[in-house]
Amino acid sequence: MRIWVDVLTPKQSLFTKAMLARAPRDVDLVITSRDYSELNKFLSQIKMKHRSFGRHGGPTVQGKLEASIDRMHKLLPFVTGIRPDCSISFISPEAARVSFGLGLPHFVCSDSPHADAPCKLAIPLSRNVFTPFAIRKSRWTQYGIDPSRVLSYHALDPWAWLLEEKSAAANASGQNVVLIRLEESYASYVKSGMGISEILGRLVRVIKSKGDFEIMIIPRYDEQREWARKKFGKQCVVPTSTVDGTDVISKSSLLIGGGGTMTQEAAILGIPNISYFPSSRLDVFENYYFPRRLSVRATRPEELIRDTSKLLSDIQKERNEFKERARKAVSSFEDPVKFVLKQVIEKTQK
Image (cartoon, rainbow, N blue to C red; front, side, top):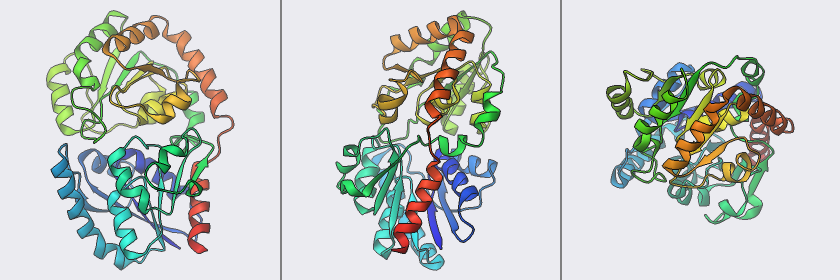
């Protein structure tokens, strides 16, 4: 059986890497991606075999539309050539549309119903949506898919790739490092001027005032990297390329996240973390991480400054408490990779 998997972000690459490692021997996964600086570097770093088609559309709606049309045009001959039995994406409008046009069953695996624009394009064309149990079905059925086609796994997405790494991460000793993950400013669901970059100067000052902490700013795009190095390079570490998220998170004292994935990883690994996401409410955080005190919510600059100061005031105590809460939370999780592959194989072969 051949499955086409379309990968558009580093997070999706991690889930796909876990799928490649745990797929049955008689299942061939063919991976495609797009030209996008952070994704290119990450795929090279994890040595994932893939073919790249098209590019990221950038921050404008016209740019996104042009890139999407061009990408579908380039994907079509490749997909017809490899003749897959079905396709999987993590809400890829191009994969959904090409699959639909060719009569291929398309499956979505995602924890991001807040990504309104791509959901409107991909979800109605998908046979099934596989999603974490913490997300209500109504968040997906609003896009036109029948409730019976939304299937939930008892886990959260980062568990797919943290499952085999968590024991090593749990034994990592914390260091006086504070990680700051910048916002995904090119995403359609992030409102301009409302990201963590807007208050980064204040944030750096309050961290410095709480002790001898090394601050690492982790950008998403080359433009963010250049800006951060120019403005904060003398006070903070700004990596020149992508980083091993699990490794740096497990060894840190605190992660301040302007997005979802690294903050989720920190929460599951039991690392104190703050989710600063004022543009939108993320379902998995609202329904799972926040109520179980696995993550701290901050939606305004004043909240972020206050919570950062509070956590750093007794960070070792906070680290111990976060770790214990995380241990209890993941004890009942299933393997989402095995769930998704089993469902895809069964439903394609019917």
